Length: 384
Image (cartoon, rainbow, N blue to C red; front, side, top):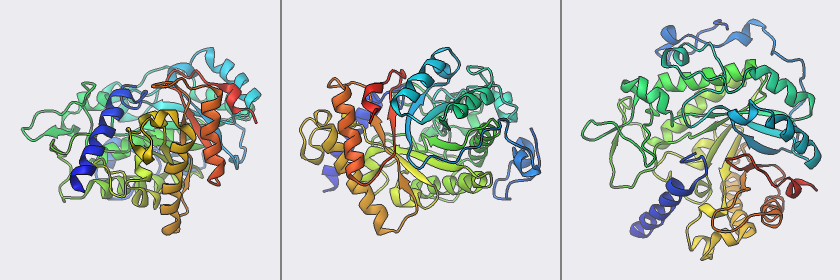
């Protein structure tokens, strides 16, 4: 049984590393954090809102009860394409944008005053004014969600060698794309990403979505070293602890917190070797966003030789697994799946996208996000 699981995981890992779009290729200091973040004095706090400071825009709509959202890169948000996407969104029923605030390159999409970002040079003005972007969204009835990539951070890794993941021989680990990762056990990294989230909230974002909330995906035979893991904490417990810390910090500002996970996390009851365990993560966030892209399931998944040719069935099976597990633990956490609006093994158009949407609705859910790394969406498929 163990051998079978390892073989299955290996094929899944290859798909993720090789084919995942962007997922693998792709002020104000007021109150101190709790003492278990030991580097506070040096890196400062972003708890500006506690002092009574107001958000930078005046639009304060309630969170939509149904979220139909699309992913937007920082580069897209900073160009005229953004205005066109708003128009298309309004005409097709899209009511939320997930916008990169910090992406998998490690760069921020805006000019921040975060000390660590200034130290390592991670500020980039892809978006001239983050607050203007959220203002534009809100006045057009679009709910802005900030996407923050956490532990895949090549910029931080290159500038702070003390924070990187290493091999057993002490050399720096590089993933299949030739990029270093930072140590998920490091409290410095926890706080840095929460500070980015707080800067996004100050600019008007109403929700925070953490991505790459995981350890590097490597074969079981590869042993990596995490220097900040002084107490032999498991990967799954570490990821859960980070989410607990981040959510407690961010809930104070009235925002919701989400965590993106591999689609397989809904089915696999362990942690896939990357620290993502559904039950443990669900204890600490408002929403789990599983990337249930049919193209990312290996041949034989749920009994289908060609999963990408069965968009409804794959999403349906995955969501049933996840919902069943959340029900058993009486979790308050809800699922908002990421669906596939891109073509890999098969051409995906209106029919295929709507088939995935139907699987969501048939499982009693009504919210979803669409992923296309180039932000080229099948808007016709979103109209109801």
